[in-house]
Amino acid sequence: MAFDGDTPMTELEDRLERFETLTAECELIAKLATDSTKREVYLRLGEQYRQLAVDMRQVIATRAAA
Image (cartoon, rainbow, N blue to C red; front, top):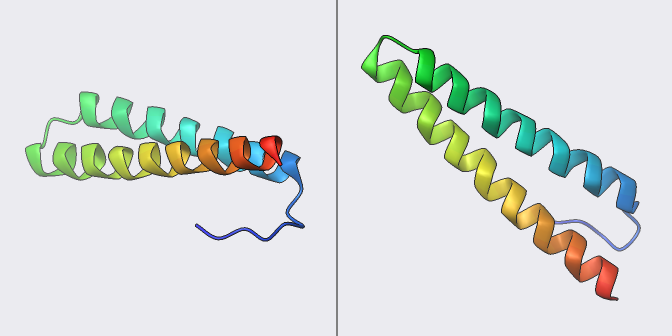
């Protein structure tokens, strides 16, 4: 994920919040899914959003330390 030094911190925090929300939504959909294929798709998608959130936290921490 690439962000230049001009990306406002609030935008980064908004994206972090969105990734966390999407993670939770995917986990809920996976939990409620009766079809095993859909369950697996949403579990994988949730993991991808979780990793994006982890990456975004790292970007925010790096920017805050600068």
